[in-house]
Image 1 (cartoon, one colour):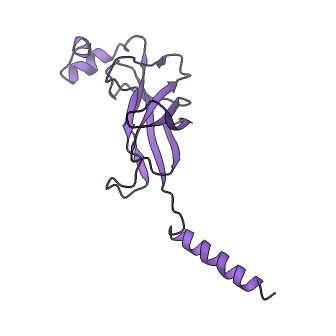
Image 2: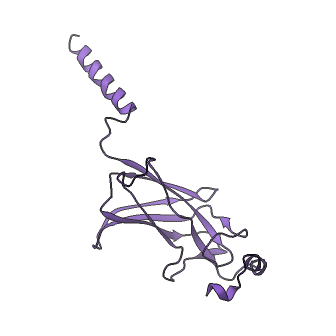
Amino acid sequence: MAMAKPVIMFASAVCLLSLFGLAHCEPRLLVEGKVYCDTCRTQFLTKASYYIKGARVKLECREDGKESVTLSAEAETDEAGSYRIPVEGDHEDETCGIQLVRSDDPVCSEISEEPYQQHKARISLTTNNGIASPVRQANPLGFLVNHPFPECKDILRELGMTQSDLV
């Protein structure tokens, strides 16, 4: 019985320290983002865009200058088109990004292969970047429709653009 008291005190101290975040040595981050349907094929959100439920995204980190993957995780979007990916550890010396994997939306499932398009988003996964929050927001990513919706012509006109401006 004399041994039980120190064990209980130690366990209580560990619980208390972890409650204050002092016992957790490895950073725990959370990547959040949204996936939308790019109904106008503009590579940005418009008032005709909608968020996609059930889309899959993948988070990958690679050591700078190397091809080998150091972290890989996938997530699926909820009914609001949002996803969340928990990340353990600090990935300061790595290049990390989110990319589109799959959409079950039969109207909106194309992934652009054009360079610099919105099918990938880089993200900083370190606590050594001046961001106090453990949450890292990724830029929205969009799947494309095969052909722009009819209302897109008017939407682009409102923005001072034409479809040929996007090519």
